[in-house]
Image 1: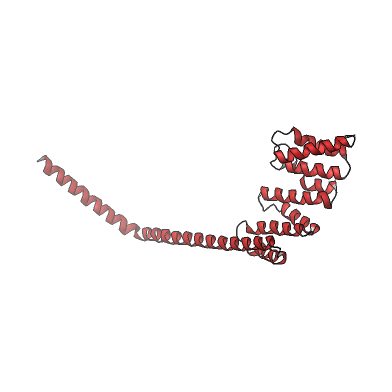
Image 2: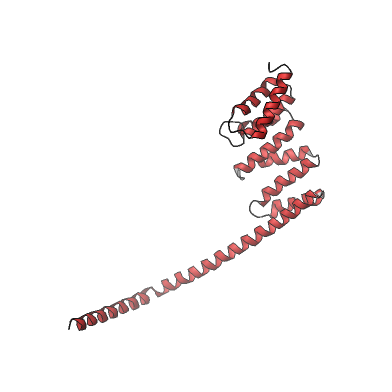
Length: 223
């Protein structure tokens, strides 16, 4: 008898649940259908966006690599033209990377002023990541060691030469070289000693700082 009662109660419950679900469906069917259609459309849109970004990025990457190869083989005019096109049509990080590489090509073929201007423009572009801006400032500064004044170099990278800044080592190096070239041995010595005192300085920059300090000492030292 107990089993019959259990079966009867289970069947009643199932009927009630069925009636409840039918009532829910009747009341909310349009909303449920709209949500289902929205999910399908959103999924299709997301997949379409992913496909577009992947194919667009791949196309920009192919153009970038082709331009790099042209630059490597000496076809700099063609390389610059492709980099210039990527600056306006490239996807993701490729526009700024193209601008950086174009500036490098200009520097390599002796057009220092144009290269410095390009690197400086990137360095001031707050829309770019900090690491890209700092790298551009450093490239401009090293070019200015030979093609500008100490003040020109300072305007580019002295803001980076502070404790804790990841770019401080190269910034101090460029400032020290610029000061040495300008004949300011005291200023040069200060920058190279700051490099030597920083236990996080990369070995290459530390070695050059030591050599520069030896050269300053050989010239009578910093006064």
